[in-house]
Amino acid sequence: MLYREAGQFKTSYAKDQQVFPIRQDRIGVAAVIAFAFLVVPLVANQYWLSAILTPFLIFALATIGLNILTGYAGQLSLGTAAFMAVGAFAAYNFVLRVPGIPILVAFVLAGVCAALVGIVFGLPSLRIKGFYLAVATLAAQFFVVWALTKFSWFSNNSSSGVISAQKIEILGYTFDSPVSKYLFTLGIVVALALAAKNMVRSSVGRAWMAVRDMDVAASVIGIRLMQTKLLAFAISSFYCGVAGALYAFAYLGTVEPEGFNLDLSFRVLFMVIIGGVGSILGSFLGAAFIVLLPIFLNTLAPVIEHGLGIQMPPGLMSNLELIVFGALIIFFLVVEPHGLARLWQIGKEKLRLWPFPH
Image (cartoon, rainbow, N blue to C red; front, side):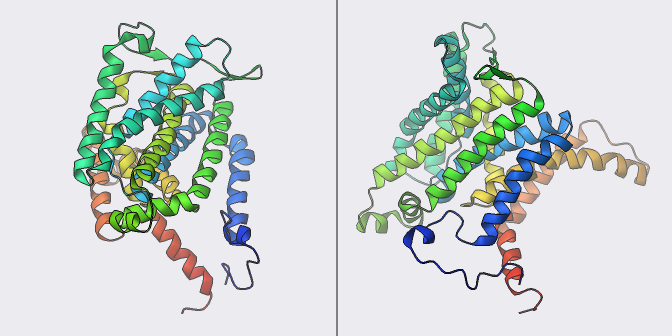
């Protein structure tokens, strides 16, 4: 009984509403965060920090944003990449046009700009839902990319629309190495992930879930549908906007509007489906799975070629990734709709009884 909950009594409402009410969860989360901050920077090389761990954290943050909207509020969206683009270009312009603005303030303002755009394109959710709403958010995807390309002011009059993000500097310290960028990204992601976990357990999160399950019944019991849905769009877009700013400043350094295309939106949606709809932990699991899967396939390819004695065509691996992504999505939708997060819950249920079989 490694995951024993017996004897952990709650004697106040504050303790009952803790983000992690079970002691083992608190210890586990604290250990993972300490490991990520203290051990990973010492043992990971520059490739892992800059090409794997940093994008994993950024995509996890974007997946949390989409999960808030789709998983908790039940509003389907295909415009995640558009809100990330708004955050990236807004942060770039704030740093460029407001002298001396702190980079963290620029990121927050970029998230606010993305939230405002999300509210505008979330207005159709007041009348439509499901796939019809997905088409409406798809319009946001195409409109934002078109606007950033059409109006050169957003890219500082760059003919190609490409922007080069400024350096990340806080209190005179420049985050220019892979380790420093990883720690900077990790700090923001941990803070926003804990805030999201706390939010979905609050009255706001319960209102989102009530609207998701049955909006008519939620309206009958006094939940304001317009305020609840638009708040979900705003907070989701804020998270995606901050993720987009990190995507430009801490990961790529140079971005263009076409880099935030529909493929990126679908990629984040795949992370939600595979990780688990309506789960903060599932956002991290799905992001890790999608980021690590291409690396695993590229590592496995030489082994298959050597074992079978064949030479794979150069373009086969990229198509194989798409085939595996599609197969996994079908698998999780049919076998385990709640994704990897549900598998983790099943594991915890087993640990509650271990070593007893029942």
